[in-house]
Image 1: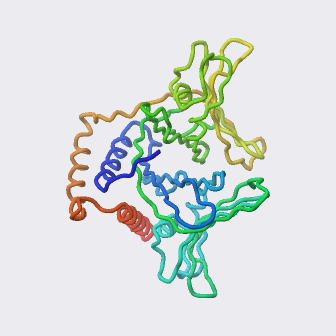
Image 2: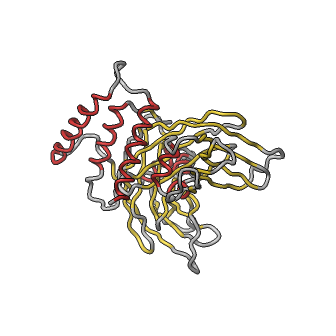
Image 3: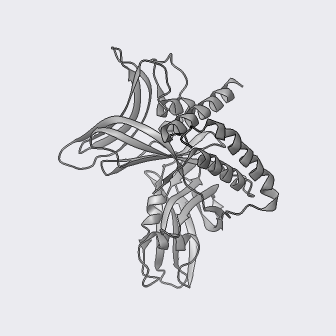
Length: 355
């Protein structure tokens, strides 16, 4: 689904996101996508990805698919559990970067663990001491409902992190009443008819709607439409059949709220055309928060405007300087690229904390 980036390609993507961030939207942030490759024994994870917001130095989303279930580790990645093995420390994003990059103190082993029973499931990334008694260095973990399988499942092993090429193709701008989303991002490949990403920031939550956008719910308002990424994109771009109105709806009512994009007929009785949505984190206020309204989809042009030429020239200079790090084979290996990026982010965050 995602392409690996070369060293130069990674800096080119960073430049592209910097250019996009100059668009007139105060909530726009530069995003970097990473994939996680797993090895080990037992039931292996199907995939792992996380989206890092470089503007706000936080994880925008962090998802692992294991044993047929999706684990959301976003909150854990932004506030990891930190033990005493490396002298303590704060539960910071910097600690998560060190955990993911195998860059904590010496004398540790790194493992992912997945465990599922009929009643509950869990997935975690851990670093602990090799010496006994074992002491925790850092951990991020998430739980999910049980798989319902008659026999428990288990898996464990190591991992590597790689930067991935994910061109953001669209911004989603919102209007409406109540709690209005800050911003939305989408990556859609029309040649493959597939969403690589749909991400919305609403009421302090990052909502990953990628899977839902690729498999939207269909009604009867647009005969002949099929549940597909193309239908999801037609919904976002207001490109479905005639006679519809388009709305986003959101709430965080307990026990679980929802956020959805929807199109339905203006004529009564109302008929659904297409909808996709995800659950939100329930709020702690009676009645919860609510919002509804419209949206516009803005395509991000691959051709820079004249006012951005200086940014491009600066990016080319950066590429030239970084080219000195390329090995004699013409490029660094992917693990070296990822580890360099992890170390860079760690230094950037610790520098901020010192000041």
